[in-house]
Length: 268
Image (cartoon, rainbow, N blue to C red):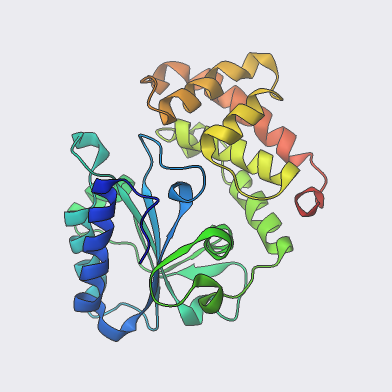
């Protein structure tokens, strides 16, 4: 197990997950993989620790709720300001993603944005998740095995055309203020990353993509994206409720630019 990309506290959290899984899920665990910003540019002050868990069979039998309860005890709610980081754990069953098809089914999503639902015992069932196309591409390219075989031995390659479809579907979901309210920072940064990926290929850290997009965005829309980048880097707090109009204008501008790109641009 290699966790050298993590800080001391995050490394201890991941070690607890690695210790938990065999006790809770036994031989159903195929592999656990570190991905995301820890391996792509480094963790920032507000970064989650991103993990992907591959299972040989669905959770069921109360194990879904048990896994969520145990992860809640390890993950840190960012609202508390306590030591450690939020965990984001995506769980897949191999039969749902291999052989590969888009979109694929996700067994479980754990993240601190769902904290209150989890505490109230509201746990989402398995769902079709187009974002798995991007996550599995990233884990195959950069993922590190914390348990089990290397990710390239576990997950099938994802065709570039499917990556392009997933990016387009992600952009299309943000249609109005009700779809981005409360997630302004994350969605602004996500659009910057998608824009950079569509033009240059590959996946880039959020702050790097935001800096790239700021050089290309119309000047009127730059301040809110710069605010999102600064908030991500922990440089300032932003009251997004006061910026709803500016956020909407910036999001619509980036969406329009992305949607106007040639469809083969991401494969160049």
